[in-house]
Length: 415
Image (cartoon, rainbow, N blue to C red):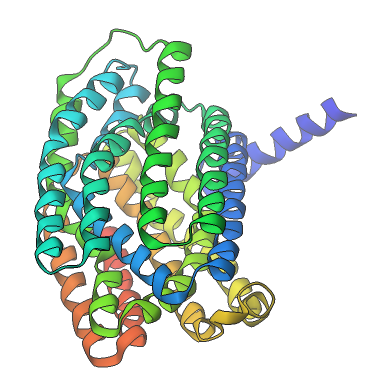
C-alpha cells in the first residue's frame, strides 16, 4: 500500500510539471528536508524570543540588537558572496573550492577585525564600555564564525538537504540552549553578545571539522569560483549594510526600547517567510545546471506562483498576529500593527529572491550594478522614512524598496 501511494505521488508530481514548469519530484524530495530544517529553526528562534521577552528588559534587548546589527554591517566586509560561489562550484563537482574558500575567508577576516577594533576605540573614547567591549568580541569571533559556516553552502551544492537538517539541528542545540541559559542567569547585553558569538563560532567549528572528515571533498578545483566569490562579496558590501541599517537608524533616532519593539515586530514575519526560503535554496544548484536561456524562459511564471504562495503565508500570519502577541509577548503589544505591516514587506522581498537567484546562477553582469544602486536607494529611503515617521516610516520604506527590487529583478532576467 505504501509503495502504491509513493508511485501515485510520483506520477502526480510528474503530471503537475506541465503546469508548474518545474522538476516537482526534485522539489518535493528536497523541500521537505529544508522546510523541516526551517521549521525547527523557527521554533528554536520563537522559544528564544519568549525568553528574551520574559527575562530581558526592552532597553537591554535593544542594545543587544543594536550590537548584532552593527556586527552584521561589519560582517559585510567579510567574503559574504563566497557561499553562493561554493554552492555553484560544488554543484559542478569542484568540491575543493569548499575548504579553500574557508581559508581565503579567514585571511580576509583581517578587514572586519580592524574595523571592529576601530569602532570599539570610538565607543571607548565616548565612555560607552558595553559597546566598546562588545565590539572587541565581534572583532575576534565574527570573521571566524562567518568563514566556518560555509559548510551549509557545501551541503547545498551537493544537494544533501537532509544533511543540512541533521547538522543544523546540532548547531541549534548548541546555540539556542546556550543562549537560553545566559538569558536566564546573565541577562545583560554584554554577556548576551559574548554568548552569541562564542556559541556561533564553537558550533560552526565543530560542524566544519566533522563535515570535512565525513564527506572528504574531492581534489577538483576551480579558481574562477574563488574569484567570482570575491567579486560578489565586494559588490555585496553596500547591500549587506543596507539590510541591517534599519536597526541602526531606529536605535539612533528613537533609542533602545523602540528598537526592541521593532525587532519583535519583524522577527516572526521574517521566520514565517523563511519557510519559503528552501525554494530559492533548491533553485540555485538547479539553475546552475541550466543554460541561461532556459532559466529566462519561465522565471516570470515561477515568480508569480511564488508570490501567490508567499501571500497566503503572510495573510494567515496577519490574521493571527494580535492573538500571537497576546499569548506569547504580552509586553510587546505595541509591535502588533508594525508586525502586520512588516509582513507585507516580507511577502514582496521573499518573492524578489527568486529572480535574483536566477541572476546569480547565470553570473549576470547586472548583479554588480544592482548591488550598488539598490543599497544606496534602500539606505536613503530607510533614513528618510525613519527620520520622518519613525518605525512606521522604516517599514513603509521596506515595502517600497522590496517592490522596486522585485520588478527590477524580473526586468534584468530579460537579458
